[in-house]
Length: 228
Image (cartoon, rainbow, N blue to C red; front, side, top):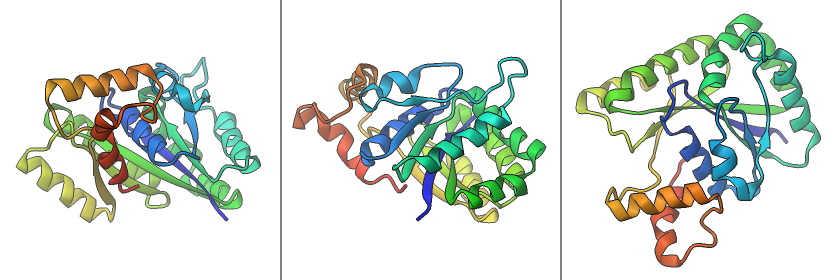
């Protein structure tokens, strides 16, 4: 049986990678959580109750993904009893991922994954409004570097709604490149109380299991409906 890893990626900071990681962690209670963010501690704090494993990918001198660290991660995955892994790539690591694929050869990486019986899915977060251009530029770089050899899923963060024009561009891009397109939004109610509740839960790092039913209702349906 293959082990599965979600790489949640996007070079644009603040696009919602850590929120999506939180939602996946709540949906898949038995998954192992990996924090691949070399710059911030957002995932370590938000998912403290899940005890994320910190993994450093960047070489401290070159600031590029270290090939040895990349390979060691997959070796470690094959040796554990877990079958599902959720990895939050920080902006600095995400920025280097397409470059890593290009420099090291996507065929070599795919061969490594196949030999290790690992299914890697790249979940690229995009948003509308004023982050649309930057997030789409990164997505395009990632798609070109992966060369159709590693599955890429586009995850639109509903917190940043797309304009009609942006929606057309996004759907056309997904269709042209044969990519799955999903949406996520941790809380559809954008009222002040709801947003403050979400902010406090993420900040506390205790998840939603200890919340009252009235508070947990903000989260449960969006997490259950997450198509990943």
